[in-house]
Length: 404
Image (cartoon, rainbow, N blue to C red; front, side):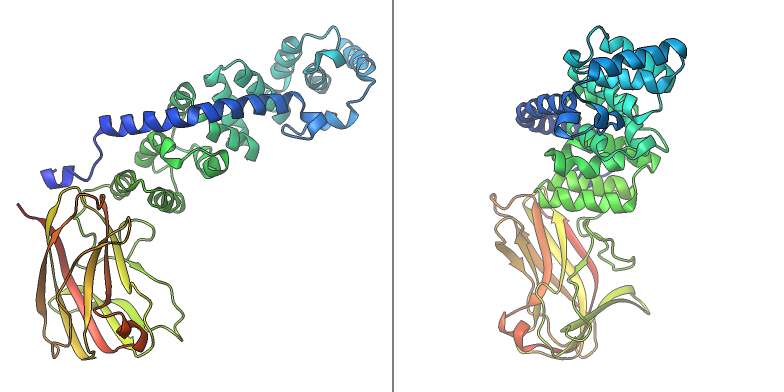
C-alpha cells in the first residue's frame, strides 16, 4: 500500500479513541435506559410490556392459589416444563409467589425448556439486572436468531455501548450468524449511533456476514452523521482493495449506491434535463455520456463524495462536446460538504466539435473545510440550469492527485 492509500484508512488508535469518547458520552443515558428496561421487565404483565408472557392473562389476586396448583402439577410430573415456566413468571413478583425461589424456578424451567422464548427472555432479564453481560448477550442472541425477537434485538443494540457486552458480541461474530443485521437495524431506535457497531462490522466483513443492503444503510447513516472517515474505511473494507481519490474515474464499472461512487439524482424520464448513461467507445473503454434534452436541469447533475486528508491537489480529466449548444457551459465544481463552500472549479466546458480535450485545475482545501468534499457537475452559470441545454457531453479519465 502506498502512502497515499494509507491516508484513506483510519489509524486504529485514533479510531479507538474516537469510539471510546463516543461510548462515554452515551453511557449515562444507557444506564438509565437499562434500569428502566429491567423495571419494565419486572412489571411486564402489569404494564403489558416486553416480555409478553402467556401466563400474564391469568396473573391476578389468586396468585398464591395458582402457585399451589402449579406446585402440585410439578410434584405429580417433575418434567412439566409449563408448570415451572409459569412459576418462574409469577415468582418475579415475590409478593404474589410466597415461598417460591425465583432463581430455582427459572433454573429448573431452563433445564426443562431452554428453547422456550419466555425462559430465554427471563434469563436475559436476570443477566442484565445482575450486569452479567456475556450471559445477557448469549440469551439475547438466541432470542434474535431463534425467534426473530425484535425487542431482544433492540436491547442488544443498547448493550453495544457496554464494553463487556461488546466484547461478548465480538466473540459471537461467526459465519452464518443471523443476529447482527437485526441488531444494527435497531440501533437508531435504541439511541446508539451506528459507529459504535463498527468493531462488529469489521469482523463480519471478511466472513461475508453482512448483506449489501445493510452495507448501503450503514454507509448512508455514517455519511449522514458526519462520520466520513469511518464511512470511507467501511467502503474500502467492503470493496476489499485500496481505491483512488476519485473512485471509478474511468467510468468502467457500474455505479454503487450510498458509498463513494458517482451519484445520479433520480428524475422522471419525461421531465429530465439530461439523460445520463455509461457507454463503451473505441479507444476509451467506459465513458460517462450526458444527452441534454433542453428541459431544466436538477443540480448537481452528477456527484461524488471524496475523502481528502491533505490540502493541495490537482484535478484532471478529459471531455468531449458534440453539437453542444450552451452559453456559459458546464463545470466540475469541488465544494466542502460542510457549509457547501466552493473551493475550485474547472474552466467552462463547451462544445469541442467531437474531439476529446483535457482539463486541469489546482485545488487548495481551506483549513476549515473538513475532510469531506463533493465533486459535482453543474452549469457554469445558474441560469442555464433553468433554461436547459441541448447536445451531448462525454467524460473520461478523471484523476485527483496530491501536489507538493
